[in-house]
Length: 195
Image (tube, rainbow, N blue to C red; front, side, top):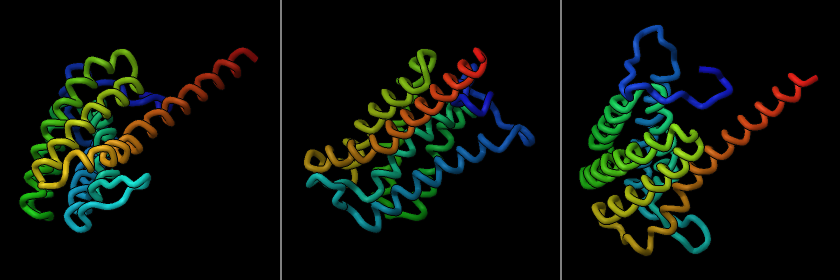
């Protein structure tokens, strides 16, 4: 794997990390779990917040959007099995640190949305990383938002636009930035190679 490209998809989807295999996999795993737990703690502490344009969302929405991107990277680096374990680890820690009802709503919403995200991401990954991340992230965000808001007792339809915009910022925008940087780097190599 070159530093200039997004992680390659795991061949069978079940790549195992072994000591000495590098720091990227464990770091992404830890970042995913931390983001999931942080989203729940922020929502538990602050509830609904204004996100601009007269929209509201749960306080953990932006961090929850980041989890959608991190889950895709985690699947590429460590495989689908590790991604599922990360979801379960984040849900378990959230149950210990946030309110029980919020942790349960979050666990159900994350498991269902991450499985849907994985189901969209995996087949699209062969057609390109950016396409797979954007489409799967949007699908996962919609499912997660509706399920979480409903199960946690938040108003679903008034909050949904703010939830989706907040999650899109930290799912779609970083993926597009990575794609642009990679295209720019590739163009630079082509030009330098022609000289």
